[in-house]
Amino acid sequence: MSPVLGPGRPDAGDIDGDGDVDADDIDALCAYMGGGGDPVICDLDNDGDIDEDDVVFLIMNYVAYDTDGDGTPDGQGAFRGDFNLDGVVNGTDLSIMNANFGDPVGYAGGNANCDGIVNGTDLSILASQFGNIATVVVPEPLTISLLGLSACLPLLRRRRH
Image 1 (cartoon, rainbow, N blue to C red):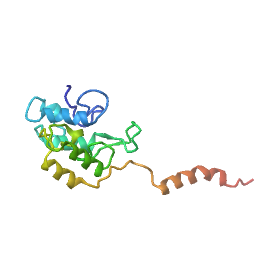
Image 2: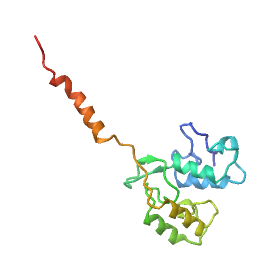
Image 3: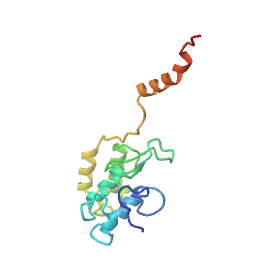
Image 4: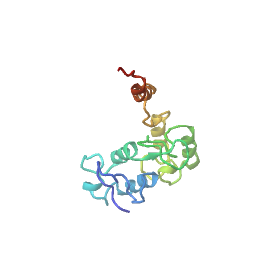
């Protein structure tokens, strides 16, 4: 595994070096907690250590989510507990956790806190985030209307002779 690259770098968060930031990168960062990773490189929140706060920072700032399931990321910056990375913490994520409760799995299996097992702590994290929806930045309708109007203004202006 390659280390996390610090904030501001175009490849920041791609811990496993595969070109995307997903649950595998969360698991890789979890493996660095408690030692093994270079704090200068892996400390995403710049507090001097590699810990669960860096994992939260990774999820909230770098992890890609796919809201429509077409395989193309729709945005980046998800919520803890969004185990299937569809941009919503909902019943599907609870089902993932339920299916793996008591099992040693990674983030995609419902382990929200990097302790290596799905348990009540993970359920508490999911409950605290339940209902959160990642937002895709889309121009507001008024902005779109103004852009359209500004494009038409030259056509509407009368010529004076």
